[in-house]
Image (cartoon, rainbow, N blue to C red; front, side):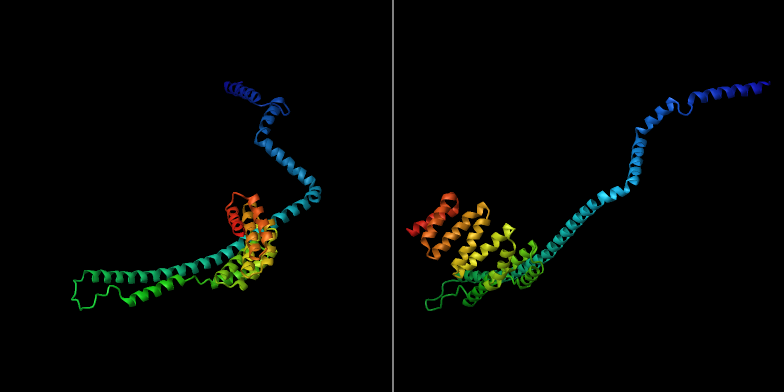
Length: 314
């Protein structure tokens, strides 16, 4: 055997020996330990995940039978919630646009008042200047007319401008009609009731009580589960009945409101009841109501007013 063959054989033997040390036969313990180490990491998670998918495949019919209806109910609930929120947000957006119209109407009126005020200020400056000039003139002869310090025409014009400024009110006809239309289109919703309150408020500012009444009455009838709208609408109704001399109707609304109003508002409602009873000339009932107000809410400003009413009754 040549030296080359011996070298190759030796090299092969060394290589075989080295390879044998680096690997173990299939099924040997070192291989299992390596696999266990590998599966404890990401491969272990993947194996559990694949096992879960296999279980889903084997039990698909069971899952569809048991979880299917639950998933459908949950989806329907989430879908309705989303749709309700969407509708609510949509209504609030539309109501906000009408509020923007209302604000622009008020802004236009404010600019008109500012323009009138500038004219008033200019006239006042002219009047003041004429008065100062008249004061500085030298004394005239005894038979000469006295200098005129103020121009009567300018004073009259200034008074006219001041009245026009004070009488200038925003024209909310456009927003009022939009609030009314929104109220009719969204009856039974908080946004619709708010629009109705806004429309009624504009009518009341214009002293159109008969036009405001249907909005307030409808809100009081529909919003039985919403205390804020109940309190606001019934307070307005009480004022309407009281102004019209409809004291029995006003007292009926007061009795309903006492049961709905939060504790901090009850003194105001009780005082209103006592005042209406006095206007009705039901003095005994009024005294009982005012005494009850003082007994239950003695430290409130309304209790102090009740004491004043009682003093006047004696």
